[in-house]
Amino acid sequence: MQRINRFSASVAALMFMGITFYSCDSKPNDKRKVYLLEDKEKVTDTPDQKTDSISYFLKECVKRTLTGIKTDELKYFSKEKNDTVLVIVKVGDIKGIEKSSRKELLFAVEDCLKAVDYFKNKKIYIDVEGRFNTLLVKTPVKADLDGKFADSDLILPFYGKNIIPNKETK
Image (cartoon, rainbow, N blue to C red; front, side, top):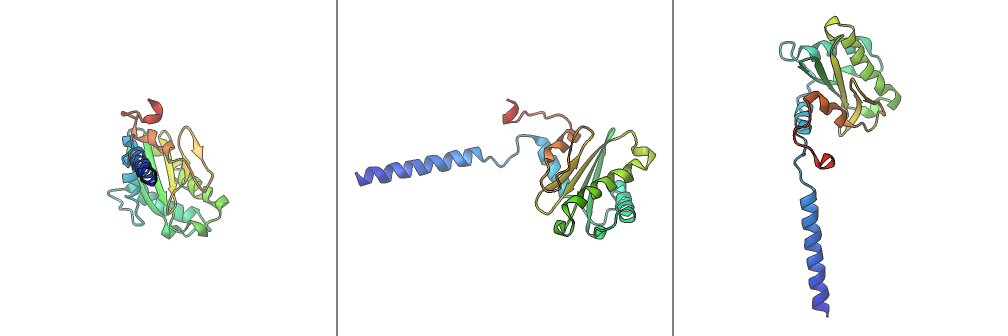
C-alpha cells in the first residue's frame, strides 16, 4: 500500500512539473513583445546625436525643464517609424522620486516633443521604465499613469499589428 502511495505521489509530481513547464513557455506569443524587450535594452544615458537624435534632444530638453529629479541618471532610447515615435526612458533610482512626481517626467518628455513642429502630427508612444518594471505608459489611444505598475502592452501597437495571435485572441 505504501508503495502505491509513493508511486502515485511521484506520478502526480511529474505530471505537475510537466504541466508547469509546458504552460510556462518562455517565448512570447506576440513578436512585438520581443521587439519591445530588445528596445528596452538599448536605453543609454549618453545618446548619440547621429544615431538617436530624438533621445539626444530629449535628454537636454528634459534636463532644462524638469526639476526635482536627477536627470543625469535617466537613460533614453527612441525610435521613429512612419508617423509614430517611440520614446523609452529608464529611471535608475525610482525610490528617489515620489509617485505623484513620476508623471511629471512623462509629461516633460511629451511637452519637449510637442514643442517641436516636426512631432506635432506624429503619434507618440512614451514608456517610462523603472529598474524592474514599467512605471508609466502613454500612447495616442490610452495611458496608464499609475506610477508604480503600468501595462507595457499598450506600447505594442507601435510595432504594428500582432501577426501571430496569442492564446488570449484564439
